[in-house]
Length: 160
Image (tube, rainbow, N blue to C red; front, side):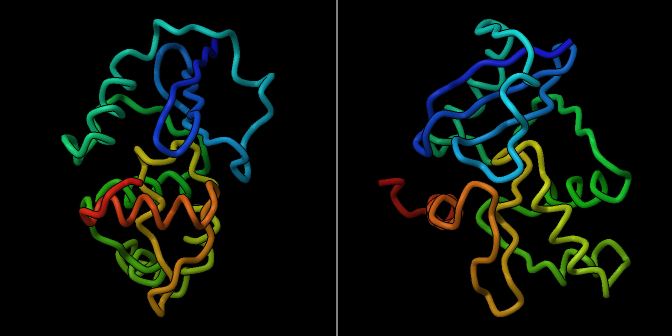
């Protein structure tokens, strides 16, 4: 059974979605590949207290690694990529090619990029930490402006 809530953030409202009480989605407004609202289940503003607390601590600069339980729905390859994203340290970036090499598939940078773009749990699974081979910002479901703001924030710049 799915439930959801909407919580405020410095990046606009975030929709949190749970599957049987376990976080399976975190979506920004106007996010690419955002599922239709009707798939988010019933609204439950009490279910997500731990996730909301960790998000508040992250945005306050007090949390660098999330510990909420996740349920990532996707192909085995996508789940492998999303797991690798969670190992990119706070404030650091990796290229799509570096991520592909880390996974033992050095020629699969495009496939890694596609999996990265389908990440269902933004921010907590930090797909914003992946950049182009030349250091440029490339693709982000939440928009390049949000990606830049998240990277700047993690590197110690002000949110605003």
